[in-house]
Image (cartoon, rainbow, N blue to C red):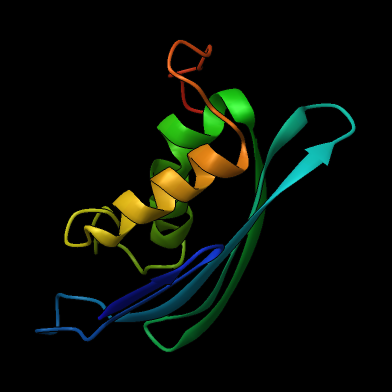
Length: 122
């Protein structure tokens, strides 16, 4: 299950077998300005993964937010899993992230041709 509203995504998944994982996560985000990085998006991923509390916050500058936010969210979620389980890429089953992508693009006023950094911020 996944729901979207501007600035917020809720995703929930039940484990399908013992090798699988479950999660119930809220992803909140807002445009803000960091003193060193400039304009960007402040993210907060909170909820639970495999029944354990999760609360991760991070900032991505404008030139890294759109190409990197799902990768960073997925890596942070992966860090909460016991090995050897692998966390799915959060975007894989959810077209809802298309709405999130467009909302971030609008919040940061990203235009075609604006510079972006494709390298991983973490």
